[in-house]
Image 1 (cartoon, helix red, strand yellow):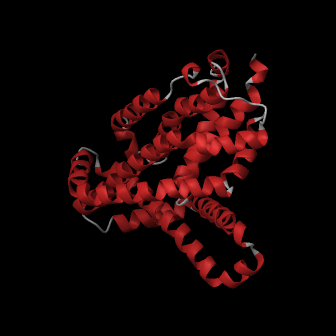
Image 2 (cartoon, rainbow, N blue to C red):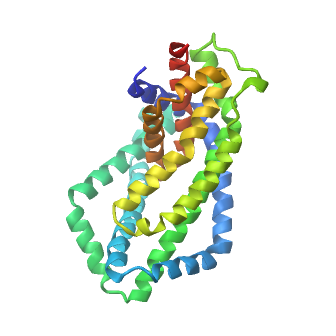
Image 3 (cartoon, rainbow, N blue to C red):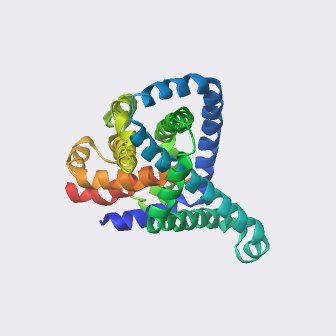
Length: 307
């Protein structure tokens, strides 16, 4: 089974009401909790970030400050554009989009807007980067340092949210995967609990290692473009093993799981595709569900071929 077909199936299933409802019920309370924690711990975290930034040469800080602030502007542009389209065209949208399809329409619209602003940024990067860098030169080093420190502190809390949401999806995976199994793979049977591969201790371990690696590679977060690649790879590493095993353990015996696990290139590809959604506002809450469903479909469609 080609990964592209798995991706298309998973997009359809992630946009189903059953999964969307589960995602919203899970992600919104977690977002509120981490937002509250961020408010309580904001000052000490920013202070630590400022100390780390104090070791960074001004030229590097300036370059990365332009990149990070440009990313923040992109985030705001996506949300503002979405809000303007919905507010100005709400009559047309409600007339031609059925109520049960409105959530799907909103997500696809956000994806389209995010892609549009991303293409604009890449095609006009020299202009965007130059303008943001020029603005940064108006500020003294301390102000720029504080601004970048605040963005890095936000990144820390965002990663805490992503990691906690990833663990929550692992705990509730069976509730939405069962529906997909009954619809698409009615002949599949659950593996007995005592025979299933254990994955949650590995998920907890990988989460701890994820934050350790984030700390170790923190100097690379100050290098434009490299920081995006580092963050993407770390997100993919966070979910790759745990999400594969969480899907495989339900419907594949240990022997099949071992045979499927050798396809590391495919597993990395699925994890990277899902992790890309973490960069897109609002859509990011569906990223772990999308990842879990992709691993599920890939396992179910390939397990018998490895017997």
